[in-house]
Length: 348
Image 1 (cartoon, rainbow, N blue to C red):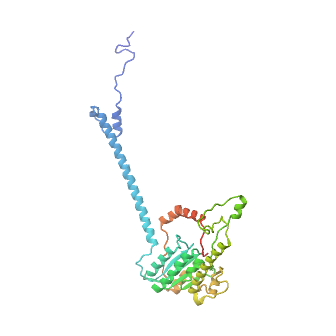
Image 2: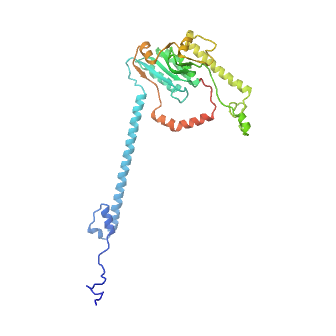
Image 3: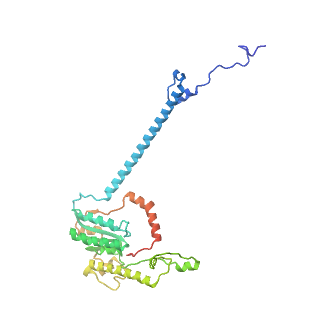
């Protein structure tokens, strides 16, 4: 019988293999060379330092790539903005004879593309260009603010005298109310036979909810300083005195509109009882009434009237950044404010 404790016996024999060196394995995985010196005193600290430096280098590399991509996007966006602005702004180096055009489309209002700020700036640029032979206002608008229209009208009169260049209005689908307020200052107005022209009147619209509130038992609590401060509030009753005051204001703006039309159209205007009643007419009827001069398009005016077939657009428009802000942010806030506020007089 053999002794299990004796060497060479068939019993249990202890293994003398050393435990694996985990620090050396870690250093090998990190790419650090493993040598016999790693087993010397302090090798653990050296290994940790190598691992720390390797991680730091990786972080620096990742940070550099992140900065690179951010700069690349910034350069790309700046390049796109430059191209858009250059396309939107007409070059000041134009010298060949051409017909300048400025669009007046959509609502005529502050902050819109058909605002006095944009339209006036575009008209000035167009008429200051030595190559422009005439300016055409290409109109397709149902109207809007009498204030914005009045500013543009006054500027048309001033620019015609300053630059001694003709300004024509060409109507596409619609030239009504504030849009016609603008067109009246032009030298001639060209329309399509089916265009909608006129609507020389003023309105102030809103709603009154007092009856409904009484039926459902809702009480309106409005505090004001001044007896007439809230007279346009849709949830409060309106007195005859307040109604008469508002009507006087509308009548005054209407007379201003009529005076502008008479001054602009002169003897060409064939006045009837309906001319300033707020009605609108087709382009063919407008020519017969003296509200317009002839049937014609932008190309016709450039070719046959101005005698400069090349057409250059000077219209000022929002750039990409402004459109994004208005679409996703500011427009929402403006819409909310408009829904809660009372609209002022409108030419539409």
